[in-house]
Length: 112
Image 1 (spheres, rainbow, N blue to C red):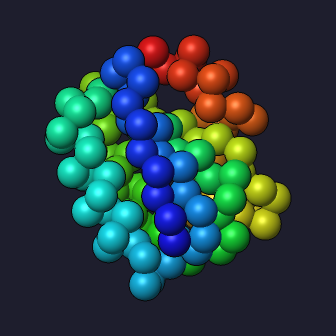
Image 2 (image 1 turned 30 degrees about the vertical axis):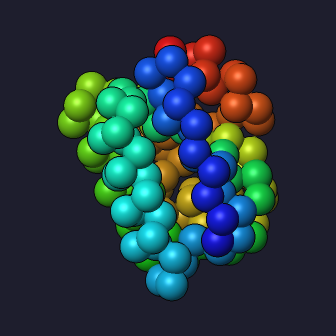
Image 3 (image 1 turned 90 degrees about the horizontal axis):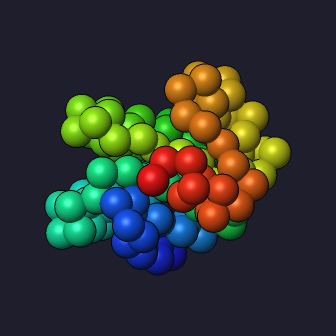
């Protein structure tokens, strides 16, 4: 898994490439938490266009970040979710609590 993070206004944008699973979930959590604290971001946008696989550990780490962002009054959004990943997110109920966008710019315009 590769992560690229960027602060845009009050939002942390995280681009994920690869698998978000048991082997990578802890790394994802640590890096996102570090950048949320460092940049004092209120919102979190996950660009999942290049996520090839997600399992329950990946779902758990996404939900954990969602709770954290919501507790501080922010919004979390997903971008570019591929159909095979979207299906898993739907089954887990994540699609019902987070907005999904095709482009990062759309998500930024809505949450900022």
